[in-house]
Length: 383
Ligand SMILES: Cc1cc2nc3c(=O)[nH]c(=O)nc-3n(C[C@H](O)[C@H](O)[C@H](O)COP(=O)(O)OP(=O)(O)OC[C@H]3O[C@@H](n4cnc5c(N)ncnc54)[C@H](O)[C@@H]3O)c2cc1C
Image (cartoon, rainbow, N blue to C red):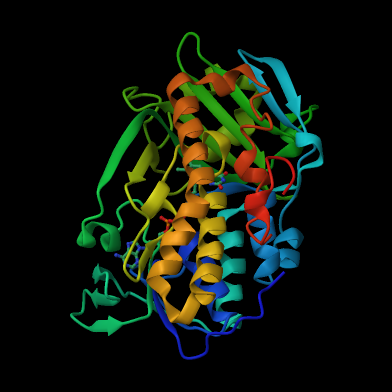
């Protein structure tokens, strides 16, 4: 439920129009803030292919008014199935926990609509090159702007974070992924449970993984995983013979992936920042806590933290945004840190391949309800 506190007259500058920046912007503007978002790209769009969202981010979408729109363009597959060396090892349905699959462009469009409907100003081709804890933002054009709150939502290479000099550790895992959005090709795939998410793992004779994610009736998200050191497996455009010999059952959709425009291989990145805030500046999303996608939770954490940031900054006692941000980090950070550690462990051990890994503990973040004011008093599974 939305808070009734209104901060008319307060101003926020947000760097980055990704999932984190747009969520923070929409949530702040709905609380009476004037909000300007800077996007360095000349277009407002989301790269990549598909995405899995869980209870935590679905609650946020509800709170910013675009839940119904997201439902209309997404789906809940019957099961998350894991196959190891071509044998099914688990069928997980998460015990009724809400989750949805969708394309990234669709989710981005819905978040953009939420921000625009709330009155957010969005500047494209506007790169933030620096920020300082007193609330000043410097743009590549040389213009400087002042705000009561600066939100660094500018991704893994955040200039807001790096210009202020937040202490951080960043590293890449040994594996990575190339993502595609292709037609479902259901008829050509033949009989099978093709509405499931299917996580195909082969560790022998080499590590090659395919994450198969239906997003709606027409579109399929395919993520092809291989070690960074495997030149052939990580090559783009993909080596069709390699992938169809490993996964002949996926030949129709792999063929479509082989002709996709501009594919890119992404090595899994982790960013661990000593603090998420300094003065009037807060970091959210991958700028603060990029994590490998093992548990499909990076964007979920980003949207949850962006939302709770907006609530905390709005409810700041006597307008003391700095103190409110300290408290926000204390309260929200532990759950994200645990998710990030688990995701890093899974990436290091590849043990998602064993199946049945979405335990209550591993779903802690997904179960979280960032919109519940009593969430910190609840234990896992109760929110
Ligand atoms: C392979 C893969 C699969 C994933 N799957 C899932 C999943 O299923 N579920 C899930 O929850 N998460 C998933 N994630 C994680 C998720 O994609 C990220 O956590 C999320 O997109 C981060 O959003 P963000 O807004 O913080 O950053 P970004 O998406 O990186 O957005 C940052 C924005 O800021 C802009 N920008 C950058 N620098 C500047 C600047 N200096 N000035 C102005 N603008 C700037 C960029 O152009 C961009 O628009 C996955 C990640 C990967 C790599």
